[in-house]
Image (cartoon, rainbow, N blue to C red; front, side, top):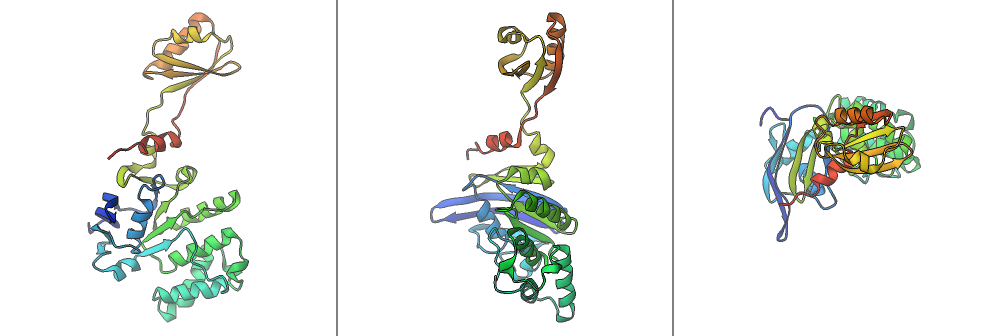
Length: 308
């Protein structure tokens, strides 16, 4: 435990008689971006609230750099930065005033205050808005201010809850870039329902479903969780569906228009070779063939079927 940056042990929480989460175990021991996924009501918000010290759990504990959140919450929170989904911004203060106030709340020494504020404004690219009222900022820049308050004290662990919610495509790209830069110095836990965000910036995936951990691993492991079972082919001579069904292992054929087909295969081992051989044998004039990759939506949907 002393070597793990974040360790969650047997975390459980009950509202009245119903368990929101049960026996959640997570270990985070390196820098990077970790994605926290789950369906609505899966237990993500409960887990985040406990990890950030907002909610006291029923059972289990959270340790940040070996410090117990339940036994020593003040010291544990010193290692933590939290960016909630709805920015906790005082709209009638300037950016500089707000971040300075956050620095005071984080007990940054007076002789380091100005430098800390200037550094975080520079990192989040909002130095030029230092004297602007927060209410006059765009949504993207408000999110940058929200990020700045989360990292002003240089925490080891940063929790971001839906950081790109409500932003336009250009703003999303800018926030993604900023998160990647922050992850070079901090460990970031990103909670989102947008799989495109996960694919774009996360190194590791944690998924909770019906209050239980159903996946914990690298992005590539999540990406390859389901084996592909379809092959796309372009056959210029356009065989009939019945002819394609005669290929060993083909269970279903979808016509995609023109000379394009999707073949659902029971076993992909050797399937492309069999298709090529049949095409040569029957003069189908094969123009393109590729095994289709399973989408993240498919993986998410499959894991969401978890039953306790």
